[in-house]
Image (cartoon, rainbow, N blue to C red; front, side):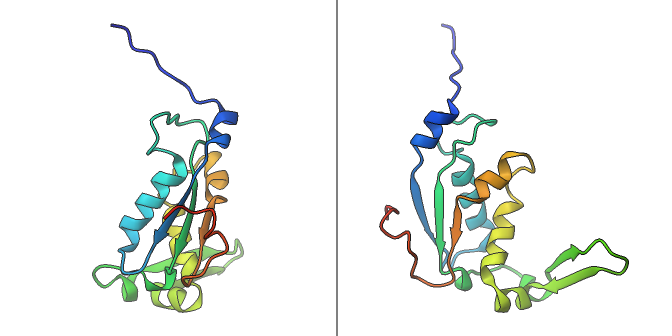
Length: 142
């Protein structure tokens, strides 16, 4: 018996996108981020093709109520550099959670998606909200 490889057409992939809701309340950051990254990439679909953007929309609510294991809240840091001499900025996770918890979730998901041309397009389909309310509640299936 011969096996056939099916390739997803990019136009067809865009037509079949679905909306998913992830409630981050009480969930561990890394485990939730892997699930969200899988949905954004489309790896949960039968017709997954690595080089086609066939992922779905994902809405994450309650970003401020995520959990982290161990002592990460105190020890984990986020690094960025302005490009100038002595332009390094190191921000601890607890300060990032106080300032904008959406950024913590977005960075966790972004770093779990391969760094290629599709990543920015896939990340545009991620919507993160600090609280329970979101304007996409009508589109999302519970």
